[in-house]
Image (cartoon, rainbow, N blue to C red; front, side, top):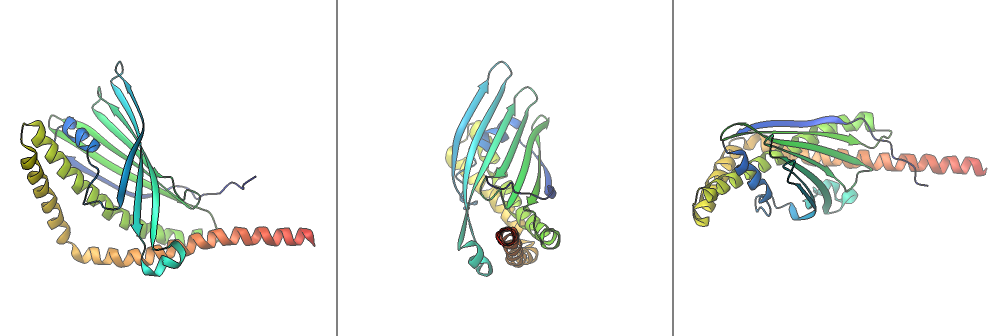
Length: 251
C-alpha cells in the first residue's frame, strides 16, 4: 500500500482584484471563449469533460481540463527536463440569479510534490461593472528542507504566478472588449481590432515595468532551482530513510 504523502499547510500565494467596466453577461461569455489565446501560448489545449445546467435554479457547472507546457530554465533542466507539461483542472459555477461566476482551479500533475489552488470570482456590482477577484494558495510535500527552502520558493513562485495572472487579466480584458463589440452588432473584424488595441495597451503598461520583469525572469531561474532542489530532497530523504529502516530490520 502506497504511503500517504504529507503536505505542508496551504499558504497564501497571491491575490488580485480588478473592476471590469463590462456587463457581467459580456464578461462571462468572454470567459467561455478566451481560449485558444496566442498571448497565453503555454495553454496548449482545453477540453470540456462535464457540463450540467439546472434551468430551475438558473445555474450551470462546467469542468474543463487544461493542458499546459512550460519551458524550464537551463539551471533546472537536469531535474525537470527541458519542458514541463502540466494538466490543470478548472471547475466553474454560474449563478445567474446572483450574477456570479466562481471558478476553482488546481494542478492535477505533480500533486504529491506541490499543489496550487486558485479561486476566481466574477461578480456583478453595478450595471455595466463586474468585480474580478483572484486568490491562490500553495502547499508542498513535507521533507527535511520544507521549512528552509519552501518559504523562499513560495515568495518567488508567487511573483512568477502573479506575472502570469497579469497576462491572463490582459487577455480577459481583450476578450471582453471583443465580446462587447460583437453583442453590440459590430463586425468580427472591428471586434478583433478593438480587442487588439486593448491588449496592446496592456502590454505597453507591462513594458513600463520592464525592470521589474527582468528581476522576475532572474528570480524565476533561482526559484525553479530552489523548488527543484527542495522537491528532489523531499523525495530522496524519505526514500533513503525507508531503505535504512528496512536494512536495520533485516540486520
